[in-house]
Amino acid sequence: GLFFGLTEKLQEVFKKLRNKGKLTEEDVNAALREIRLALLEADVNYKVVKDFIARIKERAVGQEVIQSLSPAHQVVKIVRDELVSLMGGQSARLNLAPKPPTVVMLVGLQGSGKTTTAAKLALSLKKQGRRPLLVAADVYRPAAVKQLQVLGEQIQVPVWSRPGNPVEIAASAMHEANHKGYDVVIIDTAGRLHINEELMQELEEIKARVKPHEVLLVVDAMTGQDAVTVAETFHQRLGLDGVVLTKLDGDTRGGAALSIRAVTGCPIKFVGVGEKLDMLEPFHPDRMADRILGMGDVLTLIEKAQSTIDAEQAAAMQKRLLSDDFNLEDFLEHLRQFRKMGPLEHILSLLPGFGGVKKLKEELQFDEKELIRVEAIINSMTPEERRHPEIIDGSRKRRIARGSGTTVQDVNRLLKQFEQTKKLIRQFMGSKQLRKKRFPNLK
Ligand code: GDP
Image (cartoon, rainbow, N blue to C red; front, top):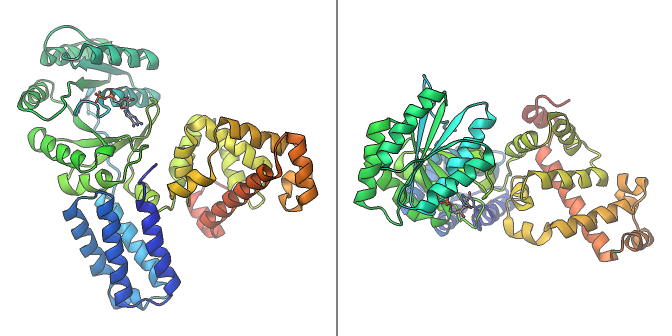
């Protein structure tokens, strides 16, 4: 899950602050010590943590915060702001060439997810109406060329490959693109297990020859501080335009995501959140900060919904989700839609309050079988019960369990999950005002 452990710890710190009401300088300092530890345990670079805490301290221990009406809230806001700026503040976009083709050169160590990312990027550009060409410039591993060809076939994007050295292959791909009108050339270069001189020289030569608009380093988020060191070395040698952080769907602690920008100065431009080819997302520092703090990421969720389901359906779902009489029928519809969007765990981690992955795993494991059971239970209810679950008493529960071939415990569990979801949505939506601000196109 995303930022394993870190979210829970930060939420714990903030809860303590909130419970105190009025804060003293010592309270804030104690909280900062815990935040510092949580970040270090999440494998965030030592120096980054030190500067980060110092900046928060400077802003948070002043009289202004302590004497404000909601000091705990102020501290959370400061931490959030600083997290956003740590990750680069603004979202960074892909540099597109003023005159096509745009050349994107992907570099990185073996196993980082480079080839997969090349295909993901091609697919996302294709969906935006561009005509990408993939280039197999990893000639040392024949399997790498084959892998790119297979991926290219899946997404219906042509793959340029030929015998010869990588510099020549890249150069001939440029010729092909100009000739056939491809507007983005994505070069998958060779990786190595470790950084070595030979690799760096080869990449420098390719760069000098094709003059890419964008050199993107692909690193594996699961490798934590090693990813940061790799990024530093590649940046010094090649000059990177951005980083793609892969495997953010794994049990990463967050160290790489939080350190890379601060250590190297290079922005993270995309994150990989799964093996499937549509699982690449643009990186937004503000949304990521919200996820780290367990505030969820409803915007990404809704964008995802919109790209998976048609717009009308998505708007309807959005509306129901945010309406005050969200009921069990909506809940079921909801679970079905979610399943279309990808692994439930990832989707749910985008929802506010679901940041605490451990809790999520215990309480909201919906696998395929579970979904069938949930469906059976809801189908055994009367329309009245679906719309007003509060009327479901003991005898109704027994009838529903019998009717759906489940147990009363199953029914109880479902009702609890439903209540939790509803509560979380309420919490997040808050006032009507906030609702208008976040979803301006919603009535
Ligand atoms: P390369 O050697 O750098 O080209 O790496 P590959 O593209 O072959 O990827 C190595 C492995 O990581 C493959 O099994 C990929 O499916 C997997 N992978 C790549 N990106 C992601 C990601 O974002 N999430 C997950 N879970 N796996 C990924």
